Length: 310
Ligand SMILES: NC(=O)c1ccc[n+]([C@@H]2O[C@H](COP(=O)([O-])OP(=O)(O)OC[C@H]3O[C@@H](n4cnc5c(N)ncnc54)[C@H](O)[C@@H]3O)[C@@H](O)[C@H]2O)c1
Image (cartoon, rainbow, N blue to C red):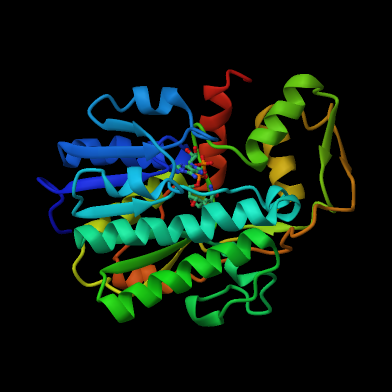
């Protein structure tokens, strides 16, 4: 792994879930870290828990403020509108943040001649017919969110090819861990309200590749410090897929609720919901020497313990 020490690092979306864990780790590696976040879904506690970082409450759509930030050597671009159903109801806003916002961040990288790491998503594959899905499967987005991430990726490639910008794209599967949002927290919220019933949105047969945030952060640090990932794209998942109904059963067993809680399904899911996410992670394993370590069950216990539900 190369050196980050002394590097000036800017993290957009650093007050969010993944951003927080990344910044926590980065703050051990460099003394020059800036979090740039408009706190639309990010939390001020996440910023306060990384006291070594400079915090700028700013919007990536505010180009003037973004460009006026101190010169960066490395930019992690995580800021985004991240909710698929919201993207279907508000495609223009989703496009603005994720597509135009990404071009703004690329402009900042171009001005500073900084290396940039772009956070993309499994949503660019849509409903893949190739499972597990590898990086070369191609774009088949199934939601406005997926499409805006495709546009972000394409701009990253364009800046790489035409301006020689040092760009790496990472596609996340379903990242989870302490402070996360998403299905694990939704289930815990529902069970906190009513432990007798757990409603799954959709059939429950939809399936996800859950990867722990600590594993994702390890890969992000490797990518940010490596000189050999320029222009490359990596899938970051666990390389395994779990049906949502099995996740629900696993959680109920951990909570000793398996005999008490009735699982129900709505059968109809939200627009843009993907059936199966299952990443082929051979490329990241080989080229980044990265091996996700944290199994799902262990860390669900960690998330539950943190919520004091058991
Ligand atoms: N969590 C996952 O499972 C997952 C999966 C695939 C891709 N991703 C991608 O990873 C990145 C981080 O996701 P996350 O789960 O931490 O989400 P998050 O919502 O916790 O973090 C996103 C952050 O971006 C900030 N933000 C949003 N719009 C902004 C704007 N216009 N200007 C400045 N800041 C803005 C939010 O306030 C928030 O802090 C996103 O790009 C997301 O699309 C996440």
